[in-house]
Length: 195
Image (cartoon, rainbow, N blue to C red; front, side, top):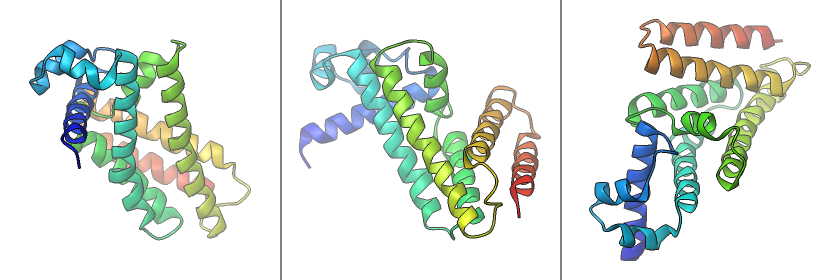
């Protein structure tokens, strides 16, 4: 591995952590350079623009999400155990692994109404993430663990929405019952969708 790759990897890791804490829009080349101990021009040479930096940070976050959340879940038994693992891994990833929570959620709020390459890239990454949940639901239907008549997109929507609710209640509101509320709602989704 080259020194340039390691430097870029370290920059992206720091940018990822800053994005988790402060949001993607607040990420600046100057602040990031200060945090990684580089000159602004040295850091700029790796990315060429704030937009490219933001896109690469979202790619880094996506790769990290796949490694920490999706891959371990795919090793679980097909069906509901896999869906549960996706949710448990995502909660763990956004609650304990990241200093400021899920960077995707803040990026979505920041860029949902702002046309451009960053928004388009976030949309692509979110579509892939949602597709992962839809595939997990479809597999549970194939395994006769969920009703095949139930719309996979609807179940994925409810599971995803439950995770967003957990994030808000757990991180922003500091509600001690957030874990129980998440579990109760998750169980209700599964029961409504069962055969």
